[in-house]
Length: 567
Image (tube, rainbow, N blue to C red; front, side):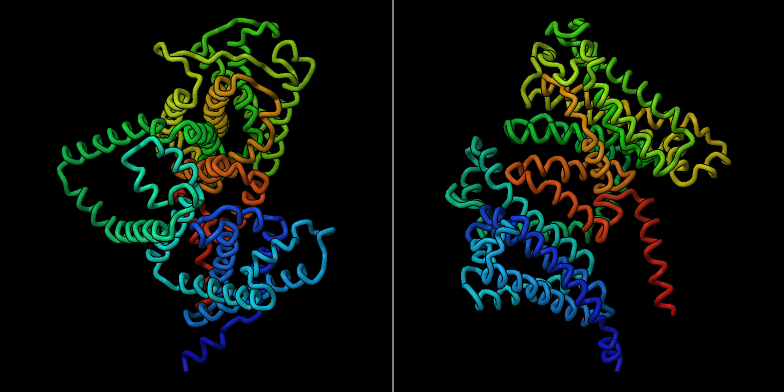
């Protein structure tokens, strides 16, 4: 009787809605050209392309959402299969229309090649039946994954994700490991001998099993390992910590040798975003002050170093300073700019604060472009011939040498952020983030607290901009557009507001991955938006959230469920 009641609670309308939305997303992916373009790259050689990986992932997510909307495990699986079937049916209708009618004048990517891909080269109608069946199977798999225990679900997701990532980055990994003779045979077995793209089938299975099993065992035994570690004598725990620090230090030292030129450049770009992210995380994540003009401090640091070190003779000032003398000046001027921004916005909150800071960033960019300041900072032509600095007879001009400077800056910012987070000032920032009026009533000086937040965040951004100046050797105003501020804010949201580890995760996802996938750069903003939408639905607290944010967010989500259950 109870199973009959559970089946009666199955929401067909909701399932139909989710299936149609998923199908619409699949149609969008196909019509913007992602399926046809991404099918040129294999994830598993000869078995699974990147285009089908994206479509399958969309089917899987559709099934997951349908399963979450169901009231029981049985209805979860049924709902996910139905939603996946609807997804496949919508895609089949698209294929039939593209094959039947010539609509390329309206939708340029509605090509015969797309029909060939989506019908598995089986044609119509056999290929359409296969497409619908695949939608039902993958959607049902999403329902099965949803009802699994959380530790198993997390292990499967991580295993699939790492396998897909390695297959996607196959060429870069092979090039990076080509100089290591001992790894050549393992690489050939994992990826093939260069004639194939993506992981081999055996390599993909091995990666999935090792990663999933390792994550499952670690999750199940992490508490025991932690408890065992705490039982050790204090001297032993201290020794283990120093051993870990030493291994990490060695890994950071030798990383450029392992990665090679291109991957080191990707790490450098990601490191600059980490530097800015750690600064904006203090302003937005700790203090709750939404700053959309953060790129202004980035520009101040870069232009200061460019002006002070430039020897081209095209500017009014030709001081020819050493970079190490110009660096603290650039950071100091960025701090002053942060205080200058903070003073007029002391009484502003929320959207008003965001609009004013956005305007501040645009003012800095327009001043950099203006003819009025052209004799001093180069105007639209920018500053060229910024000399690379030297350190202990080493000229910092290659990605491998610049890497160590960026890592040193990130470690310094990480140390300062972690110390400030739990300090009295850090607790004042968090109180300010929760409620300004209550914080003021408790004796917190709002003026000093806000100005310190803006100044500290600006210092990190100025440091990043100063390093950017010597990295590029040239500075142009177009390098400091509003999109930089949006990207840094996005990586904080994706990683987790107020979370220091989340900054690293967000930078890897939103700065590192696009650099690795330059061949698909035209879809970068589309993937950005899709990632943010999915994350806000699936994991709104971010991929590595701060404990307080995670607890508060899940408490808010749990209350309506509890009330509904009581009713």
